[in-house]
Structures are given as structure tokens and as C-alpha cells.
Amino acid sequence: MDGAEVRDWRAEGKANGIPAPIAMLAELTHRCPLSCPYCSNPVELAQKSLELDTSDWVRVFQQAAELGVLQLHLSGGEPAARRDLVDLVKAARDAGLYTNLITSGIGLTERRLQELDAAGLDHIQLSLQGTDANMADRIGGYKGGFQRKMQVAEWIKDIGFPLTLNAVVHRQNLHQLPRAIEMALEMNARRIEVAIVQFHGWAMSNRDALMPTKEQAQEASRVVAEARDRLKGQLVLDYVPADYHADYPKRCMGGWGTTGLNVAPDGEVLPCHAAQTIKSLRFDNVRTKSLSEIWYRGSAFNAYRGDDWMQEPCRSCDRKKLDFGGCRCQAMALAGDPNATDPVCVKSPLHAELQMHTALLSRDKTAELTFRKQPSA
Amino acid sequence: MTDGLSPNSIPVIPRGVRLHWDHVREKWVLLAPERAVALDPIGHAIMTEIDGARSFGTITTALADKYGAPHEQVAADAGEFLRGLMNRRILEVA
Image 1 (cartoon, helix red, strand yellow):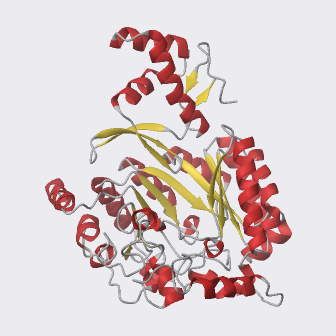
Image 2 (cartoon, rainbow over the protein chains, first blue to last red; image 1 turned 180 degrees about the vertical axis):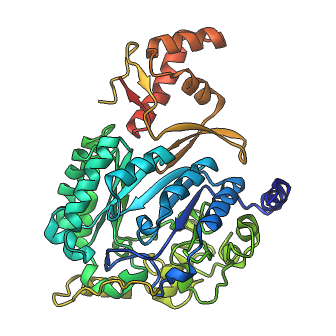
Image 3 (cartoon, rainbow over the protein chains, first blue to last red; image 1 turned 120 degrees about the vertical axis):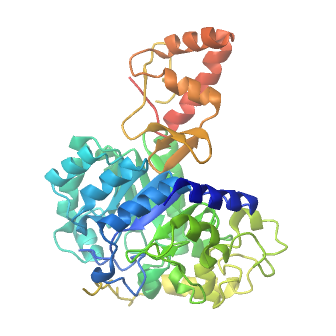
């Protein structure tokens, strides 16, 4: 596209109070060797044959940089499942984007990591399903995965990539959190993200098996606070608490359509990774429109910008500029209405019922994991 | 360990952190893992003095001379700024 067109969209956006996005999540594929029961991919996975090709992604990266995106997260599925990953990283860097690879490590060899290094990859975020092979391979649904991940972590350390360890925690592995923090230090990671499972996508059908108890959620907050203090300047801890046990909802996506956007494997552009669960929304595709037009004009992005859409108790709430009424997808999932107050909020009429239900879910002794499936060819 | 910024320390911008001109917002930013730190002109002036060889003391002296500001004031302001980055693992010292 030509630069003049982008600037026109930006001027229009500025006039309407729409900031340019800072971050873009590129879901390169929904294919993944793992089958984590909390996968954030939609339950209806994008087929391999519908994935954007290399030249599509290169164009999207260039459009993203023009639009004002600074940080690009290459994700999936497992992005290493894309044969053109090295070329995509190079194209992203050439476009001027800070390029982060979000991976389980499976599919990365030492040679491929060296190629990614030469292509200019800025940072790696390595997921952790558990702190030992028993837990990690069971949760990831992939035997031998933990051992391979540990090997990949060694190579990452040898090459010197900046590393964030991404520990996804839930009722079955929360007791391993202190060990996960130690592992981050052993891997020379600068950061660890401790994310208590958020219940979207596949996790929604595993709430009974994954919901932490209130005591676990409190203990996790204590462990994180203690480690932050003890490891100040050594390890940065980012923390996503268990919002079902909270009094106020999370500030979802930093505000709908204000900070970031997702591009799905088939080119659909989403305000967040779970947005497709809101069936009333219509999504544009990078195959037919520019990213700027989609960001500034797309109906899905404009649906929850500002506060015109809000109902009570959000509309008159003094926290509405802090959390924007919480997560729209969670309001859809739990209240059946994407415009409702996120039911995790104490001011939601559904809050008390949700708290009771959460307590029951967290004590389910018989629940079994439903693993994520693979997309069709 | 992050109190460890003395006049003899050598600040180093680590791998994975870089200065970037944001052509859309028309300002300098420091790009780092999961972070984009907007820099004001003073922050930018400090960052551009860091070359991985010169000490913090040399840098603050150079900044004080360049901007005609009292050295103690420059050292205090730059120290606070850089310690904030060190706490976030965006800056290291050798």
C-alpha cells in the first residue's frame, strides 16, 4: 500500500480518538504438536490449507509497522510448525518490528535457532506446562516434550537470546510455581510470566479440571509477591491472577481496540484471541483489506471502543476507565451477553452465583482433562 | 543488586533492547522484551551516551557539560532513570 493512504487513516483515527496499536499477535498456524487442555486457540481451528502464505504475512508485517505496531509476537499453535519461520522473522525485522517468538520449543533445533538468530529474532518466550516430565508431558499431551524443551532452553542460553519463561498454572500444577521460578533463573531468563489459566477457548471446557482453589490463587499471589521482592533486578515477574477469584475484572487487552490486535492463521483480524466467540461480530481479513482500514474502520474493532456500548452497572461506575467493564468474551461466555458487566466483577448481578460455582469447580475430584485437537488439513 | 550503579559502573544496553524511532508517535522508544518504553528527550540523551565502554561517571560528566546543568543534579536524575531500567532488566552494568 502507499504511505499516503496509511496517514489518512491515522488522521481519521486521531480525530475519532483511536490510538495506533502497539502490539500485534500473529497466529501463524493453529497446528501444534502439543494439545494443552487450556489452549487459547478457538475451538474451531483454522485449517492448514487456509493459512496465509509467506508473502501474505510479509505484507501484513509491513502494514503493521506502518500502522504503528512496535512489538510483533509470532505465535500459534506452534509457530515453529511453519517451515518459513526464519524468513518470516527476517521480514518482520526488516519491517522494523521488535520480534518475539512464542513457542513450546518443539520443532526448534540448534541449527534452526542459529538461523533465527541470524535473521534477527529479538526475544523468545518459552512455555512451561510443568516443572518435571511427568506433569509437563501429561498436560502438554506430548511424551518426551519436557526433555526436548529443556534441550531447547540450553541452546537458547548458549546463543544468548533474551528469554521469558511462560508458566501457565492451574489447579493441577500450581504447587510447582516456586520450582518454575527457580527454573527461570537456571535458564538465565530475564522474565517469567506466571499466568493462571484464563478460561477461554479449550480451557472453557476444562474449567472443572483446571480451576484453582481460592487458597491456591492466594498462595500464587503470595509466592509472586515474595519472589518479586527477593529477585528485584534479577528476574522480572509478570503475573496474571485468577480472575474468577477476584473482586474486579481484568483490564482486558488494555482496552478493546486501543493497544493490540491479533491476526488469525487464515488472515482474520481480531481485537483479541477469543473474539470469535462473540457471534455478533464480523471480522475483516487481511486478504481483502489493509490492516489500517481494519484497525480504524472495522466493525469488530469499533464495537467496544469507548463506553457507548456499556450497560449498568458499568456505565455509571467510577472504575470504567480502569477495566472497561472487564472482558467482553468472558461476559459473552458467562452472562450470555457481550455487553454485560464481566461476571467476575463484584458489581455484576451474577457475581455471587459465579463465586459459588467457581468454588464447586475447584473442588471437583473426578474431572478429567479434555485435550485440544489438531486442525484439519 | 540494582543499587549497584556507582560512578565506576559501566552501563550496558543488553541484547534484546534497542532504541527505535517511532515514526507514528514521533518519539524515541526503547524496545525490550514485552515492553516499549517511551523516552523523553532527556531519557533519549542519556541512552545515546551509553556505549558499553564508558562509565556512569563519565557519562554524567559529559551530559552536564553538554547541557550546562549541575553535575550532581544530572547524576541523580540519570541514576534514578537507569536504576528503573535495571529493575526491569532493560539495562545491565558491567
